[in-house]
Image (cartoon, rainbow, N blue to C red; front, side):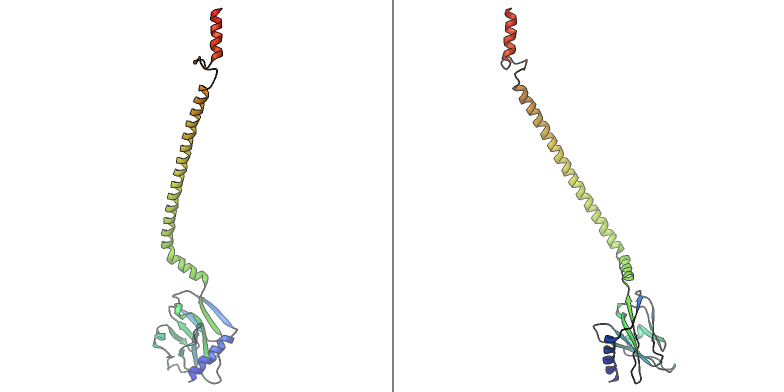
Length: 206
């Protein structure tokens, strides 16, 4: 019954708490969280919105009595080096959240929260380092495809220019031939050059 009450109280406290200490971590690292309550017997909770608070363990004032875990799986991740310090081994995304320590005796007293998170820069660097080989391969393939397309476009453009040049050259030759055939001063065609023929005939008569 007391645990249920603590869940309710902690949920209300986490909603109203103003003081939260932000702690950036790296995945796989070991993390220590200190309780700011000057007491030895405490409950440790983890709050990860929108889920309800999760009870992790309880510590005792006696050094001969070990911590009491809510779940046996938590023993693989959590431990207490001192009664006021929670140790997280090889942290993963499952352990991210806001941690609170709570006084076990009446009246209840809650600590300020300690938010454990992965900073954007750390997470981005880890993601980029993991994806570097794949990104390099994709970039190389994209470069090859772009180069091939540019070469194809260049060849098509050159063929078009060459075709236009050939058509323009043929059209120029046809225009020149047409002009020569219609030129009245053509010396080799007497019919097309009547004046020249008449002049030559006159000179012969003289």
